[in-house]
Structures are given as structure tokens and as C-alpha cells.
Image (cartoon, rainbow, N blue to C red; front, top):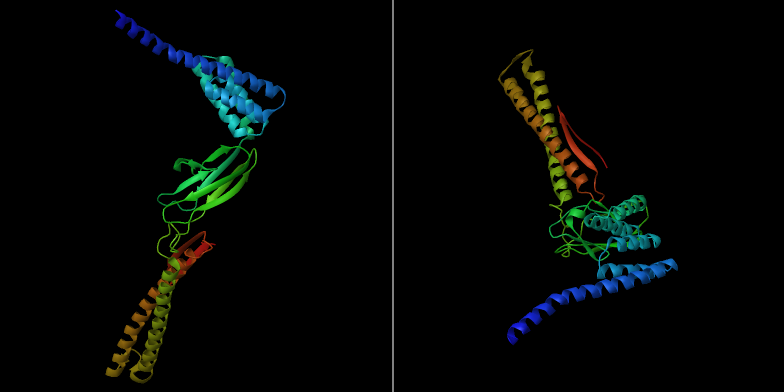
Length: 304
């Protein structure tokens, strides 16, 4: 009998403990909220924000969030205010409080046009790239998205395995979107920047040089073809009839002409391709470049 009573007492105390702890949290939250209201009424907004935030942590509530959002708005933290109002709306709708929900929607509509946004982009995404804003990790999904932040100064960091870390400071203004682009990160071993393929400029110079050689070869064979044809027509042919030497010279001239044509075409294409690679591999980062081929021509086009 005693054992049964003892077990029952333990169970009763165990059930009562969470309720007592919850009551303590509610009491602390209420005291912090009232202190926050007193500070807000006195115009001491930074201190009031601390009390409202502590009250919300102790016992979340839509009303507390409305006051916290109002406090953040007074100190210029528009993004923090926006988040508080949105959280208040969610809690109010969940609790079946249309009055609080209406208040939250009204405040959201007021603060949204004032939001400062920060958009972080990466010039080249590399494996293992991690980004931080003010020490907090930015998920890959947040890249290229204008995220609401509080106006003022912010720090953006980028890092990846094997590359030098990168940091920049940026100031965002209320009502505006500021964009920060993470550059191509330099490798710690001094190699090509992360995300880069083979260096294009040396390849471009090699291909272009081959093109120049092709044009020179084409010129030599073209001159040879012209010389042999002129000799055949001058000394060994009468109209369309040629002697044995003239026939051989004419045949050689035709062969040299064919070689010259092929050399000119290949040399021109190689020269144009080399120029394109040189432009694309330039440190100034060409905007666009393309190779246009036509009958007897090769042209590099682009905007740089």
C-alpha cells in the first residue's frame, strides 16, 4: 500500500513539474513584457527591444511579437521588424486571433516598402563554396536572391577548399537593393583561379601562331603557283595547247594553288580562333565573343 502511494505521489509530482515550469516562464515573460512597455513609453527603444525579445523567448506570443516588431521599426531595424510581424501573423492565425492577424498584416504592409535588401552573387560557383553574411552561413539557395536585411553595414565572406578566403564590407540603405558579387577566388597554390578551366590566352597564342604559319605557307604556294602558270603560258603554251614542259608546269601550278587555298582557309580559321581565345582569356573578362566563318573569310565579333 505504501509503495503504491509513493508511486502515485511521484507520478503526480512529475505531471505537475512541467506545468510549474510553464507557469514560471509565463510569469517571467509577463514581467519582461511589462518592463519593455515601460521602456518603450519612455522612448528607450533599444532597451525595450531587449526586454520584448527576452519575453518572446520565455513564452512566444503574437502580441509580444507585434510589440517587438514595433520596437525594431523604431530603431531602424526594418528587416527584423518585418520578420517579427510575419511571425506574429503566423501565431495569430494559428491561435484563431483575427484581430492580431489584421494588425500584423497592416504592419507588414507598412514596413515592406522600407526594406533594405542584399543580393549576393558568385562570379563562378566552385565546389565547396561557403558564404557568410555577418558571420551567419548563407545557404546556396540564397545566392542571387535579394534578402531583406537591416539597413547599415554588413560583412560578406566567401571561402572554399584550396582557395584564399574573401571578405568585403557593404552598406545597404532602406528601400534599396544592394548587390555584392563574389569574385573568382584565387587558389592558395598560386594556380589558376578556382573554377577556371585551362588558361585560354596561351592556347590562343599557340593557335593564332599556327594560323599565321598557315597564311605564310598559303602565300608561298600561291606565289609559286602564279610563277609556274606564268612561265607555262609565256614559254610553253599557245592558247590552250601546251608542250610537255608547259603541261607539267600547269599541273604543278594547279597543285600549288590548291595547297595555297587550303592553307589560307585553315590559317585564317586558326588565326581567328586564336584571337577569340586570347580575348576570352583576357584579365578584363570579355563580355562576349564569337567566330563567324564565311566564304573566304573568318571574323571575330564581340563586345568587350
